Length: 423
Image 1 (cartoon, rainbow, N blue to C red):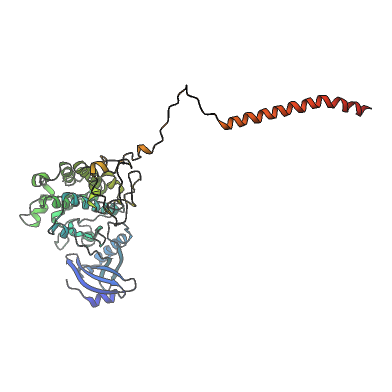
Image 2 (cartoon, one colour):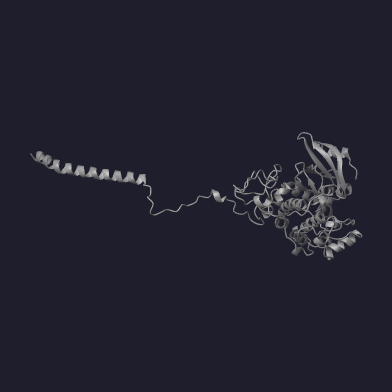
């Protein structure tokens, strides 16, 4: 699909239209810039053959309104949507940091800890969409992009639904909805979809990041791969990647259960279990050390564990970006949200010293030295006098003395006065 810049400029007169950024079955993405706001954007255009279908246009408008209402740091924001002159456009934030696919494929690659941490960021974004009743339907590394700040964001929500409508696997033209390598069994079988459907795609993506291969071999046509997803069990992760910790592998494999009821039912519960498994495998503090921004995800971050050492034992600088809302020390509570800038924790402090065992709710992080200690009293030792009580006794004695003096005067003086009065 080629870019018609003249058409885009006519439909979006407030924008300068730039170069093409990508293309696929869902259409084409073009760079743009809003002149007055000086904001760089990505413009996604659906293919002409799809936007010409009235049903597709209706679904596009309905989905675009919902997507534009999503406000989450791990979901790409939709700034505008246009349906005019036979054109369907979404105007979104431009994410120049590349895809998770490209990040995993570069020379350095990803460590197991980095792959898990980035999956937690994806789980946070998916969870926010699920709370709004939105399913992604096509979770894969190509749909996870990095902002300039380094924050990972989920893109292309609802595109499969816009294109396919009520269909779950194939369009009427025979095109596969979603990517066969990541597609959930219930999508293949035409069954009802749920957040567990996106959990399957996320678990498949993480399996690939950890092992370098897919849960099912790609040795035939797409239809054969779809059959495997629907009717066969995936290869155990540790069989192909024995370096992956057992606790982490167990969470991934549960996310790949063929029966949706056997999977994690939400992306948040999958993320929390994955974070806790990481703590079990790599000790508390592993997530902090990776410096992967994970925002608005308190249950997930909580599950990774928190510092529990006394203040006097270790001084923590600004924590890894994204994990906290401010510079935190072991005595300060966490919200799990933060901006994506900061300084990494000091590497000179061993994790076993700076962090507790983690895995659940934050431990009691009040420094024992800061708590007041009650001192025992010696009954035989002289006790200090209470100066306030002494002052009260003096006042009482003075009042009593004054009353006595007045009474004596009254006894001596009043009889004489009474006699003078009678005379």
